[in-house]
Length: 478
Image (cartoon, rainbow, N blue to C red; front, top):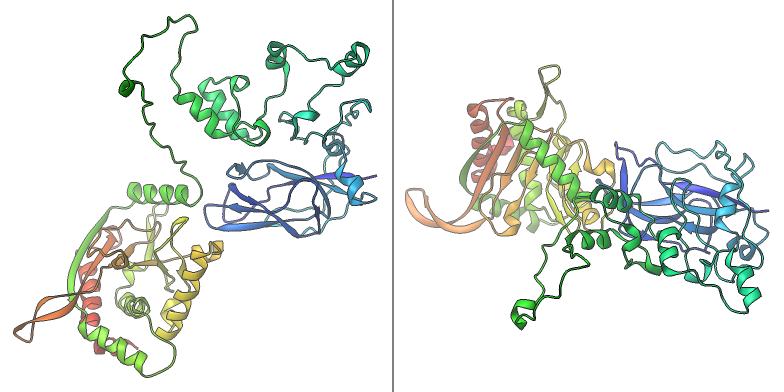
């Protein structure tokens, strides 16, 4: 006899409490192996493939792609221990989930942080299966105990009570539409959709879902909220000119969740807590560009410009450690950090992320180039791990790649400073007493005024500019 086990969204670590379903990797009826990835989710940190600790047949999935689920919410149910895959796929999900799991159920225990499968699942009240004479069709998917059951197919929604009437009358018994609207199931899976409807007084039974099999999505509720209320007894409005009857375009609402939501939260906190200030300077980068060209012409791996700027940053932080720190307001202390973990801003299709180069102060320009390349490629593929995105102590922001000269960036909380690098372009410049065309870059430093004053910040920025203009200055600290 098959046992159907419920697999819940595990704790993804790093204090994350929710995740958005990006892509299902299995369908209802598929056979899955132990530790096989079943769904790809997006957290505020990264994309994660979630493996299932059970082997068997998928009997139900909870949540459509794009749905945001809290940690601990059901992801899917798996029929374990069936005689064969066909028998397991036909198990009524509502009956199977109620059968519970015991210590003999097959599982690996190898799921994500904070989620164990060694303990037996809680027993549930057994639900009697539907009558064998019920209308044919796939069995409805079992929703969690606190949620309503939503049929996967309209053919499976015929209640057992209507079957005898159909047999005696020789025709299918169809309940009146009003009764069905009042008593039938509501095609909603996401608890977030239910909460949104409840908060705004939207009757879910009055909505027509745009999802698969009429499933009501968040967009359906939002569409109902935007629709004007029209009294049923209102007199018909006179015909209006064609131009006036055109539908007024509605403002687009983009949910602040996933990476975008995490960025919004962090930047808002930075603005609330950090009294930041910015100073900037123009620098002649002609000699730095020439030094990089000479390095790359000498053979070996190519050295990137951001790697050279990172090496200059770590040397400047060694001279001005106040900027490699954080502020502990509870203890009213400035915590100066002994190691430089250098973050760098990277724009991706998923939004702005800040990968971190660990122990940047101990790396050469060649090592920094390789690590920047690895993290940038992972960011583009959405494969950065939470460890790649945390632990930064100072951020380097190369906004010159966007074709701009200057910026006043927001500090990456809880760090104390960020160095911005603009584009390097030919400009008129006084060089050795004469006007010449030189490669000029604008450098800006945004710093937490609690950790230092303008003199320290200016000294840091001036040293960086000196190294850019005369790379030989950097040799003193190598």
